[in-house]
Amino acid sequence: MPENAPCGRGPVERIRYAALLLPVLLAAQQVDPDEIRVKSQAYAPHLPTLRVETNLVEIGVVVRDNSGRAVSGLAKENFQIRDDGREREVADFAVDSSAGAEALTRPNGKADAAPIPGTVGRRFIALYFDDVNSKDEQHANDLKQTREAAGKFVKDALQPGVKIGVFTTSGTPALDFTDDPAKLSDAIAGVRAHPRLSEKGASVCPAVTPYVAYLIAVRRDTEAANDVAYQCRDPGQVISRQSDEVTRAQAEETWRRAKELSMETLESIGRVTDRLATMPGTRVLLLASSGFLTATLEPQRDRIVSRALHAGVVINGLDSKGLDGWRPIEASVPLTGPGSRVAAGLAHQRFEVVQVGLRVDAMNEPLAALSEGTGGIFFHDNNNLEAGFRELAAPPEIAYRLSFRLPEAAAEDSYHKLTVKVVNARYKSVQARPGYFTPQRKAAQAENSPSRFDKEVIAPDTIEDFPVQLSASTTKLPSGEMTVSVVANVDISKLNFEKQKDRRTQKIRFLTALMDAQGAIVAAKEASMDLALKEGTYNRFAKSGLNAKLTLQVPPGVYKLREVVEEIGGKMSCSTNPIEVR
Image 1 (tube, rainbow, N blue to C red):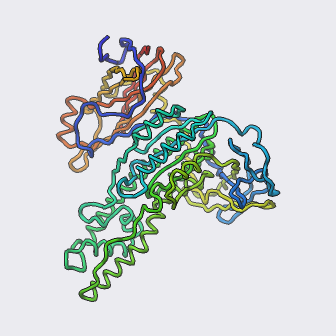
Image 2 (cartoon, rainbow, N blue to C red):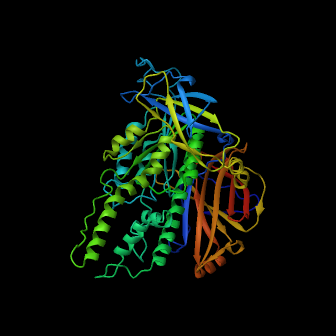
Image 3 (cartoon, helix red, strand yellow):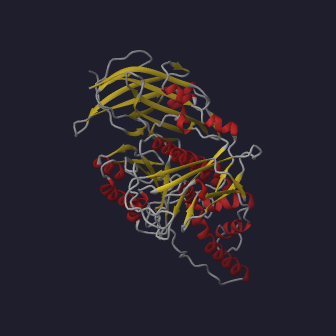
């Protein structure tokens, strides 16, 4: 049996192997990090069950008493919904109860003596580490301590019926839901920071951080622009020689990159939400992050909330930077010299003092909004991350799902403020999403339809819009398990690249799936490559082809290997080959 066996368009020699789910790797290719960015995750197929009616707005509500316990026994008549101040009729009403619902409070103030029947079942917890927006070694309680706290939490959380998955923004590492403590421990230990945007801003003026860039580029904040001018002044000067046009251009570029990164983070969270939605039991997504900016991205954030509510997924947020994440300003501003310099120094101090708190709020906003909108909890301003994991791992014992119908005249893509009140019942607090964006009906319908990529994953056809050569190799691990890696070599000379300054840009999406005889997916993983190739790199890959490697885990058996490769622009290459694993 050769070490490498080709996988072409037709039948291939059968390969004996057992596979392990590993990160995507670029096979034997040395390029600058900014030329090829790779992300990977377990493939979550399109789920028709997640289809959300565009004329319904769903609201998850958790009602708590003075002790913080969930209040049970409420009915449809106990809730009032106001949409921009106008009362809406409750169209649908449902009650979700979870395992561990021993300490519930009835509306009369008495606690239930026993769990509600049918609440005890399987639990699935998705541990999501935001390793791209993390600031390891900069904040005292960032990714390192978050990783350590999560490792301790898993040891106690793996009770009968509980399965945990490990997911990251970067896609590395990725571990699907399991109850194997060793695999979970290894996956958590493998989480590392993959920062793609410096908090120190660009080299032209480090004062233009992503948050300051947002203030200047979006809010048109003249105070922020003046502070940048002060910080980027020449020694001995009060005013920067850098022009307003240069400052604004740098702010807009920094904000563009920060917004792009936040969009990718939201897309990643959405994919994990969809994956969690397929699990048969109570579902919690525990999102650990230092925070990121989602200003102007509220509609995308709201769509995640809607999908999570519809699928019964609770998102709990954990602020991993803790209380020590934002240290007081240590640098003092000299106030000697001309009066104008004193005034500029005082203005800088005022700006820093005021904005440091607002910046923290802006970075925490997506975690708070996703938690509040899905009936979850946002754990923040606390350095005890172990306690945070314990508190956030369980879904609310009782949650109510309400919905109301949108009026026909509702403007599309507009924000509406929601308030939910409880009447004729004793309670302390009501937790519900604070608002929603009216969906764009055509866009929502398209979003709820399987994409061409999803359709091709389960299709039997062969497509070759551009050449892709497949090969597979097997390796025996010290544990005795076997791994197989499928390498796709893409002829990028046949792809459509855009020219941006000195780079050729394109995005390629890959999927490797193993299916049983009935066509059901047994294991699958997808990855994407964002390409920004220099001319020399492009010419090299145009001759040799661009490699991407995916590795999977399956039990022994006979399978069909399905490979789907898609470029942005519509071209695809798809093939199916028989494979034997033993």
